[in-house]
Length: 357
Ligand SMILES: [Zn+2]
Ligand SMILES: [Zn+2]
Image (tube, rainbow, N blue to C red; front, side, top):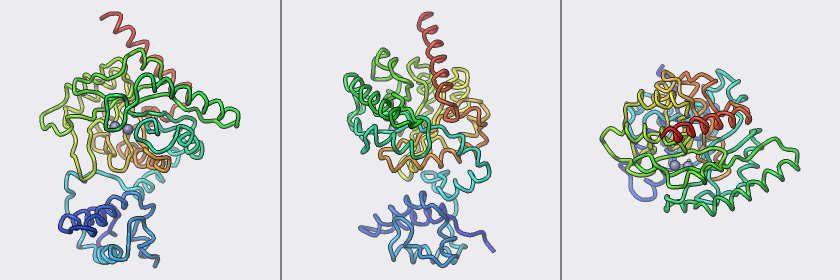
């Protein structure tokens, strides 16, 4: 008996089917392929139990019939994944991985990457804090895009100060309600290909922590090691966001001498991110294996653009566990005081470098 068809297999079969389809059907197939990554259980299990596949998000009667045929004939499963769609975990798979070590979900103290209405997110600071509190987090970091990313309505320095006042208000009301969560002030600093940010060091020094990411020149074929080393050496940056820049079925992302990049992160004691957004999952399990060898710190962030998206943290957590990352390297496992202590140490070290330079 061949092993049952997984949601990852079904996603690939749907994506392949979409390639040859047109119009409404093509859009429905593409939507279902992406939705498969967040189906809470294996479709084959659902079918085995006699439940309807239309229970699954993004699945109408026509697609349900296709899924059923694939599930009942596992030999038809797709072969090797197209590299554009390879090494993405599904939620059903992630939950199986996390079940092997339940302590991991319990140790998770917070989410360090999310957007609000201050840039291109749909929730307010209070909405994101509320969803974090519902997940029993001790902290969430608000990381709206910085000014240079016009397409995402990036935030400038004056707006960053206004946002600080709003975050202070939200934290005060959390305290009044006796809740345990803290909203951290952060940003997703837009890095140019030279690894430089687009905000003053003074403005960034007022934040609790700084995440920085590349959003341009992401289709370069040549080795990009130098831009990564420059970004990590940028004294304002603490976490390198979605390092590779890949997007499911759209962009493969950049290439670099990854062992060298991760060794530099480890030497500087900075973190590389697992962006847990289902379409990103960046870093992925393969590259996290190299992070594990280098011993660099890892940050988990959902890159949520809506309060409903905080649940995809499980994808990143499972990827880290599967890759063998040790728990003491995951910064989201640190209590708040330790997390802020780590940032303070990085800032001391960068002042030393700035003073020497
Ligand atoms: Zn980004
Ligand atoms: Zn983001």
